Structure formats: C-alpha cells, structure tokens
Amino acid sequence: MKELLLFLSCVLCVSADGQHSDIKIAGCSDSYGEEMYGLDGEEKAYADFNKQEMIYPLPPFVDPMTVPGAYEQAVANQQSCQQNLKIVLYFIFPPLIAPSVMIYTRDEVEFGENNTLICHVTGFYPAPVNVSWTKNEQKVTGSSINTPYPNKDGSFRQTSRLDFTPQLGDIYRCAVEHLSLTEPLTKIYEVEASAHSDPGVGPSVFCGVGLTLGLVGVAAGTFFLVKGNECS
Image 1 (cartoon, rainbow, N blue to C red):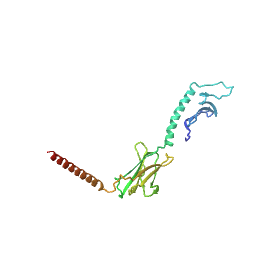
Image 2 (cartoon, rainbow, N blue to C red):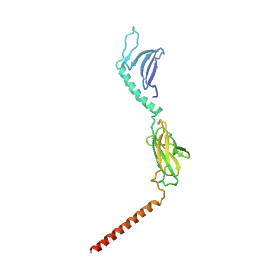
Image 3 (cartoon, rainbow, N blue to C red):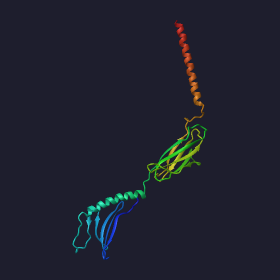
Image 4 (cartoon, helix red, strand yellow):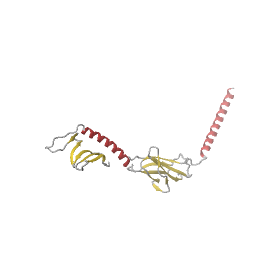
C-alpha cells in the first residue's frame, strides 16, 4: 500500500519581540501518527499512541507540566487526520475496478454470410483496456475499438469489433487486459450448428412436416371410414 504522510496542522507562532517561537505539528500516515508541541526548538510535549498518554520530556529540575485532555484531543485529531487521508488517497491513488466482458454477434448468424463479433467491456476503472482477438488459437488483426466512454457511476466502457464470416466449428476469443487484472479476461464465441446454413431450410422443413402430417391424417380418416362401412 502506498504510504502518504498527511499533516493535519503545522502551526508556528513567533512572539512580537522575536525571542520565542511556538510550534505544533499534527500528522498521520497509513501506519503512523504524530502530535507534538515545541518551544524555542525544544519539545514540550508529544502524544505517545502506543502508551496511550501524553509525554512531557522536561528535565528533572523543571516543574512538571500537564495539559488536561491533551491526549484525548490528540486522539480526536488523529481520527480526523485518518479520514482526510482516506479522501486524499482516493483522489491520488483511486481504486482499480475490474471490467466485465460480453461477446456476441451484430446480426443473426448464417454460415458464409459476413457478420461482426462484438466484445463489450464495461465497469472498469481507470481507462483504457486493451482487447486482442484470436480465431482457432491464432491471432487475428483488423479489429477496431472505440475510445473509452464514461458510465454514470464513474467507470468506463469500451467496445471492440471484429468482422468475420461464420464457419461451423470456428472458435473466436476476445482477451481483455486491464490494470486491475493479473491475467487477461477472456470470453469465447463458438460457431455452432444452430446457425442457419440455408435461409430456406426452415420453411421447407416445416412445409414437409405439415404435408406428412396431412397425408397421415387422410390415411387415418380413410381407414376409419372403410371400417365403418364394413360394420354397416
């Protein structure tokens, strides 16, 4: 995690005659907190957050001094500092958000007919992503990708397109690379037998099935008509 020291306050006061200077420093980081008071280059007091008390490093011959509530105030200052630090860290080092990926075709698939594969990437931060394509494990070129477009939640989306001609059994992959990913996120599209090999096959099949059922119906009707005549 990136370490950042945030100073909640650093105040230096100098007396009118310039003979004395007072200083207060309060700050924090991810793993460290500090609150110190000084006078004329010497420490007067500091907060020890391990011992949970205010320390007054005065020499033995000086009357001890204490400030009631000083440690409790230092703790409250640290809490405020940590909250401010989170805000600063968010803007300096914003969190990485991994993308989600979908792959689909522009048009209904028909064997031998030109079409377009679409790899839609969304919900990632920061921009951009890198998208590469393969066909049957071989890299392909000629794809395109638009510029990152912002979503309403502050994340981004991009779309990559690849023109292709569907052939049964072909396997296409789009691989997405992003700062949030340790390895590419891959989606697969396989050209299956469910695609239409001939636009006219469907209607012909339905017509053939309808004709067959019609003939079966006529045959069955003739059979029962003959049997009825025999009984009479």
